[in-house]
Length: 316
Ligand SMILES: [Zn+2]
Picture (cartoon, protein in one colour):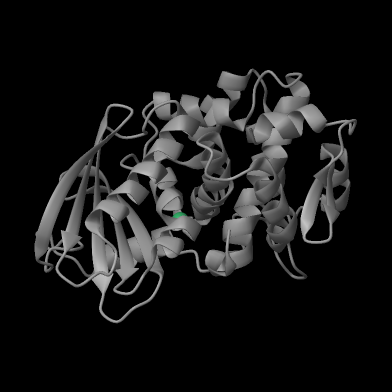
C-alpha cells in the first residue's frame, strides 16, 4: 500500500540465520527487557503482545489497536485465527522512523508462532495506517513451514492474502487492492535466464512470483467451480488439517489438501507446471478478463468483463 512494500523480509532466510546462531535457551528477544505485556483476543486465539524496552512516540494503545486490526483481518480471511496462541514482540528502534521489518517463526519459545516487529521511535499514526507488514507477518501463521526451494509459496501467499484480508475488514477497498496488483504483480514474472519457481530464488520470484502463482490459481479454481470455491477455501482447509507455521510439511502435501477442498486439481497441476520451468502469465489479458482497467492513477472496474464476478469474489 505504500512505497515500502518492496521491503518484505525473507522469513525463512532470517529463520535459518537465527536458528543457526541460537542455542536452545537463546530465542529471539531473549536478551531484551520486556517492559509491558498485553493479551489480545482474535476469533478465540490468544495474542500476547510484548513491548521491549525503548521509547516510542506512539502509545501502546495505538500499537495494540494496530495488532488487533491485523489479527482481525487474518481471522476474517481464514474464518479463524490460524494458531491458538501467538506472541508478538514489539521492538522500538531508537531514533527510528516508520515500521521496521518483521519476522515470524513457528514453534518458538513455547508458542506455536512468534512475530517480532521493529517500530521506529518516531513512527506515527499515519505509519500504522499505511503498514501492511503486521498483517503480512500474521498471515504467515496460516501455512506450514516449507523446505527452502518452496519458500516462495510462504512469501507469495502472505503477499497475496494480506490485502485481500484487509479488504474483508474494510481497511482497504477492492479498487486499492487491484490497483496495487496491476502495479506490482508483473515483478513476479520470470526474467531471462530464470528457471522454475522452485529454482530461482530472487526477491521478485519469491514474493511476487509466489503471489502470481496464488492469483492464477485463485482465478483457475473459480473458473472451474463456477465461482463457488476459491483459493481461500483451499487455504482454510490446509489450516483445518493442522497446516500452521509450527508444522514442517512439503508443498505437495498442502496443495493436495487444498485441491480436495475445492474439488479440483488446480493447485497440484499448476505447481507441477511451474516448479521446474519458467511460466510467463499474460497479465494484460488477465486484467482485461477480470475487468480491471487502469485509468491514470486509478482503476476502473468493467462491469460486463467475462470474469467480473470472479474479481468481485476475490476482493470483497
Ligand atoms: Zn513474509
